[in-house]
Amino acid sequence: MSRIKEFFHRWNKRGCPQCGGKEETCVVKDTIQGIAAEVSICCEQCGAEINYWAYGAYLFPQTKIEIVRAFFVGLKRKLREWV
Ligand SMILES: [Zn+2]
Image 1: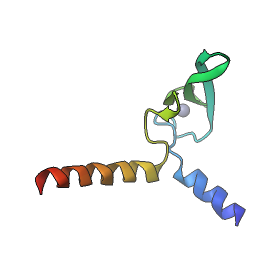
Image 2 (image 1 turned 90 degrees about the vertical axis):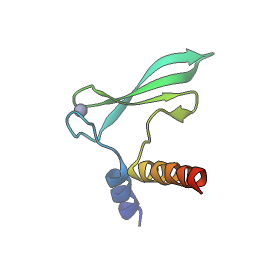
Image 3 (image 1 turned 45 degrees about the vertical axis):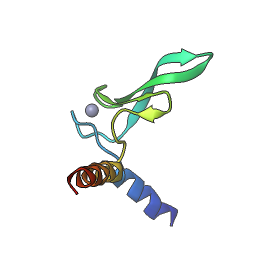
Image 4 (image 1 turned 180 degrees about the vertical axis):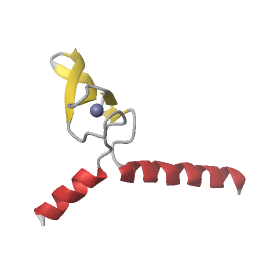
């Protein structure tokens, strides 16, 4: 079961837009009282910035599912405006 989860987790991850690599490293950009406040998530292979995490939230959706969810939430909001 954990293997399926692991596979799903890997599939679900957004790859690096530069090289398609799925391994990522975190680079702490800013700390507040020793706690990471801003973290840059970079590709381990080419060093391109994939995502940015600041104060508990990711700048970009981290997974494909989150992208889809964001799309539907946006759609719902639009529907509410139209109807
Ligand atoms: Zn890369």
